[in-house]
Image: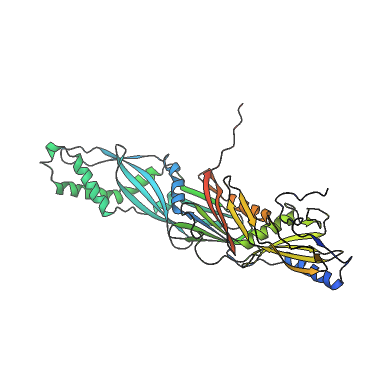
Length: 432
């Protein structure tokens, strides 16, 4: 009994191409053509990008910061006396950091500073900062830091509605018996003077006390996985921070638009990947020995097999292409095309189906005994693209978050993923 191909291999030839090579050798012209075609395929140059686009919701980034804010100190802020009435004191704390749009190459951060009375919010100041993340294509990473130094250059603001709210709060502190002696105008004037001093001369000391011992209010690093990159561009969308990455791979660029896949869940991280990237990563894996590159005539992986495999992606009908070359002895080249359909299973793995696999081109002396169809084409290609999506990591102030594929789709030119972030399990510590 012949050995069956290993499950999930890139090129499943055994059930797909029952062919008979009819001549013991090939004409030198055919062999030269096949070898030249193989050589040209392996020497393709990198193409202009971008090839990957990642959309991270501002809301996701903002929520990930909240844990670190809980450990920041509170500052006591005495209220001014109102005649004979002692109004007590407030607590000041950094309540939230909300990321928002900013000019290209940067991201906005609105820091909300809450004034609390007995743990309940009274009013809030707002600080709007603009931060330029550090982009490192060689490392495949983007680092966003919002430190104390960034906030020292920003003056807080207080919307008119918050000023009115604060005045009403001060008025509520005045005992009923004293209200005959203290008018609303006096309370409103006191509130305005207090707030003006708060956002003016008193703010630097309050700010420094709030940030005491804190180098970074936000320190976020996004790792784009093991894809060779030459450039990363950062854009601020309406609801997402967008990262556009250019890969050093022979792959077509993504079509213009937003980084978020159309119709995807806006609460999840979105990833668009050029189909050519998925194919190029499969070829790199074959070149490095990560997945089989040689096959015998039965389609089984064989380190001495005469057929060399390669994967390509061409936007249009049956975009996923699989090639097989026989460059010695009986020379031949086979090219297959198919339209993959992908879906994320409950465990996060991808289920891939190709229903229209077709033998599209033949070079050399061969005879196809029956119609050629293939099932499971490109499973390894999609496993690699899935591993790229799953390898995206977020590090927020020392807490790691890993991406998990929730949905997957394939178009004629690209792969689209929706990713959920979850805190990575911490390594177990040994007990002594």
